[in-house]
Image (cartoon, rainbow, N blue to C red; front, side, top):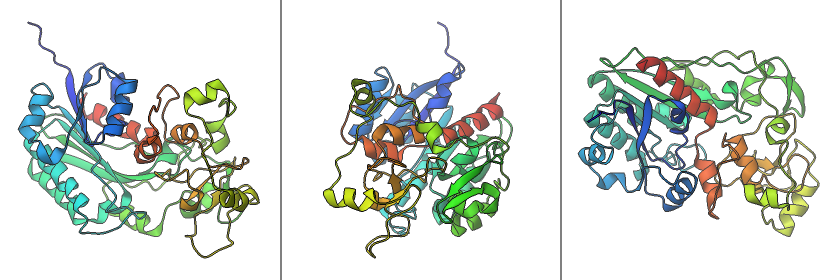
Length: 371
């Protein structure tokens, strides 16, 4: 009997399996198990990939040995994004949030399974937590070489200034130490500054233009890999990423999930008078980045699960009186138009997804280490 020697990949907390997506192009690798307890995520992914090995299950109730069996007897590459709500600056930031324990659980599973490669993604503030430091220490003791960084998706080809903590570990006997690629995007052209209200080069105000908060900057410098330079290629403007979509209301647009959300009369009145790139500031009941309109020659801020609500961030279309559609947000997250969302709750899935540019960084690092 011929033995399948391909690398068996498992993604925990899979959601729409964005971490797995780049690995599908690697002939040496095969997805062996995707697991999440969210039935909406499971249904959505299986709608797109009916034959995928997607298991609806709770990781707190599945032993590492059971995971190995479910994956066909071996796990070579382990990916995962444990819940981030307790660490996020837009979430509770509660050190006692029970969901924070999933990072420790992820480390325990990795240590027991001992795959060739491990990769984890989370929000930037997780880098300063005891859970992350413990994960790194236990993987070192288990015989892994690792690196970590807070990466900005825009500096790797996304239109979205989405920042994430990326951790990659390679078992010492399996390959060389992992290396994260340097930013290739940045360029010299000007982008619209939402804080200054004019076009500016990125290097004139990196923190403001790329949405890099001071806390993130401090944490970034403490990690093993630091993104301290801009790349040479131009980051795509918002208009370049969203162009060529069919007109809302047409059959082609409906097929893509490119539909306008239902907004209240007050929201439409409030946002209808806001100029491109500006924000509504007529009240004190909201935070500084809410009720913002995007700019065609600007970059997008991080897409969240609430992007359909103008009060939750800068998610209003640059020229039309509506929030970004599901398909527009999906494009900003790097989803191909071929990936469809058959369920009403898909906005949550898009907001929780990993930006495709960051998924590529992880994939390239692991492949380079193992080849």
